[in-house]
Length: 302
Image (cartoon, rainbow, N blue to C red; front, side, top):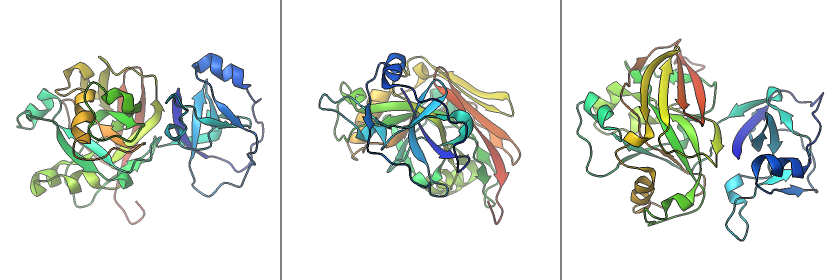
């Protein structure tokens, strides 16, 4: 299943599409869902985002974050609100994650480490990005006035579904909820100046994520690409990761508790390079989706 977050484009819902029966959803997704008959439509808060299940270009509103709806067998069974679905034309997709933290892996592709003059680390190199850096599809990445070089870094993202600590590599994938597409935008000059990466990686808007979280995606041998203005800048496959996803999860969980909804960025391939205001960055992961974000100069309003 594909999980989205969305906001409304209009206050009303004229021309609503027919409600699809629960059996139709099960046939298309092989997942059973509960319907909440007691739900009542309330006025939307300005700018508020909602969880949804995307099925055949229709968005079915959910009662809560889907990884919180777990049955006794441990299966994720998000509850669909009993109402007519939204067409994608009626909503704006926002970032499909609300993590307590973003754990990122540096230099996880050997060619990327080499292009910046670094050795491959002897164990996963972990740094953090703040959740305030997250933006969704189509939202603008703000080029900070204090930086002279901002780079794109296309990556595969892993969304944690269950609380975990000290997990083994063999068990690690049991704690994965799904996968998404991400861009680890970096102020390269500040990264080199500071020696540590918090400022360079942590600006607001420096973590585009989307367009959805796919719970059935297989990340094995998938192409990861980043394009700028339609020109391919980065392209590699997940098989060339130095440290595979189970190793990364096990390593991170040795020193911090991972919570449901937490996001792990798995590293970027070679080909990183600068962008400028006016550029559009697009990150693609084969079989998963793509996310595009324009770059704008920092102003009083941006």
